[in-house]
Image 1 (cartoon, rainbow, N blue to C red):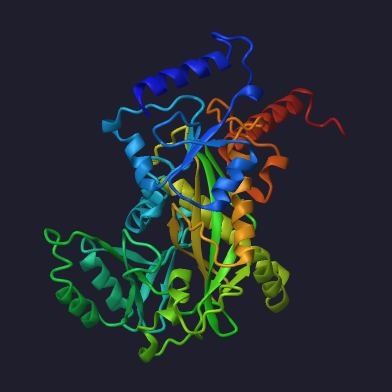
Image 2: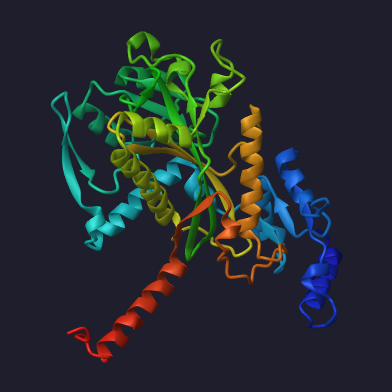
Length: 443
């Protein structure tokens, strides 16, 4: 956007709020959008609202951008400053949550901080392994598999590995997605061999890319003998105070080949990785349903096979996991008021119905693989816009970001620290009032 464009844009917004032109109202304001993604689920939703598409160099109110564009806009060098009627779909340092190594670092720091403060949430317990080893785990915050960043944590990883040498670990490059570069190991020798073949991958001066290595969840819940994970959409409109919403229409992604932990299948990604980008190349892939199943169907299946009480407990644990992962990054996240973000949470459920956070995506795919997929993603974008925009539908960062119940659509409130604080203050005041009126009035 040129400086002249910004000047004209700012002038028009000044007019809109009555500082120059008293007659200009929100109803008459035209909303301009631009996007880096040529996706019909986006453009159709924007145009349905009567918005007009412009390029990034023009005056825009709403930008659905790629992560790199967002970084460029917020970089110090750009000198770009957004005005009150502009919104963008990423937080400046979203990678604190979506980059695998930083997510692990932030969750570990969060737990340590709670432990230092004596918070009961940080209580620990001992876990005995079948192989004879023993490890300490967090009782309430044990929602990510034991994970180390390589090469930095290599010695700590070896120490943990030796406590249970029969375990399998999964190796992932920190900066990649869609299953790229992932492999499983069950012997230290395999890791060392890979390191040599990667030409000094663990030599800090040479390595350009870091990896995370996590204990593999080798007892996943299976349905029809196949492994699956959950893709859930979480919308964050603010990190301080934290305001987050869960989209109720998430889905399961199934592997196309039955689960097998034998050595011969350790390298078969169709057995172990649920990513659609991997599974769609398999001979067993079904393009009609895309290997997907709705969260509602999963809940019904679990209620029928395990009971309603444990199913409700599982979904409560999933909400708990999401909230605490967001709280873990909130202190380091640049909570710019122009921003919101929809994250794709990938969660695996083990056969004890315990959920594990696998990773978080800042740009979950908007590509539709089936008709059901297209309907879901269209609804997702429509509902996101309803939640992040003020009631009149015009971007305005001065709005308090408290949507009405009707505006939530298929989203449900996970946490709103501002509302929680207001309710706490009201309850406190009510308690004071009741005490002043005499605590025993019903005697």
